[in-house]
Image (cartoon, rainbow, N blue to C red):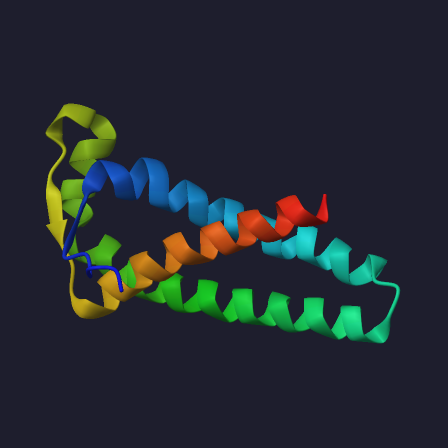
Length: 118
């Protein structure tokens, strides 16, 4: 089992995590939707619809917990957005840490799924 993360750099939040979340949202809303539409069997269609719902729920949970992080560290994040050299580490509560680990895992799963389907 991987060790739980307890902090993350503001830079990583702004320039890695948030762009990946946006990419995941787009992939779920477009790629998985297309996969569902192209299914040849009801079983395949049900599988992809279930995956789409699972990913959407996971993304919602991640976004809710990250919204909390963004609100708590708004000043620090704005400073890093204006000057990357002002990067700081942000302490995570257990929900935020879980959300970040879930985001990384979901990103890998979605990438693997879309690559195998292409």
